Amino acid sequence: MNTTDKYNDIIDKERPQHDGDEFEARHPKMSLENRAKIFAPFAALKGYEEAIDETGKVHLPPT
Image 1 (cartoon, one colour):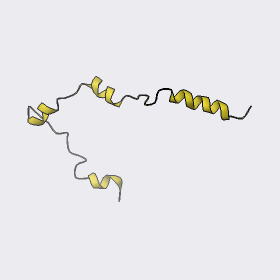
Image 2 (cartoon, helix red, strand yellow):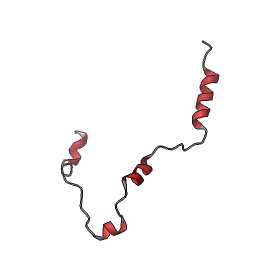
Image 3 (cartoon, helix red, strand yellow):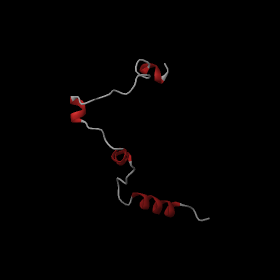
Image 4 (cartoon, helix red, strand yellow):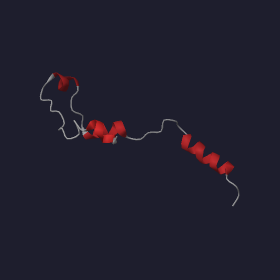
């Protein structure tokens, strides 16, 4: 089974339009700037990258 086979019934449908209905009242359209903030990368662990870099330095054989 192809991965997209289970979505064949909805794959070509357009995005639903909410023109003043209850859904739109509860979930107003978000600006592109705010949507970008949701998916922006962040450092979950402060100092993690530095710790990884330091570990690499300690365990690398001398060149």
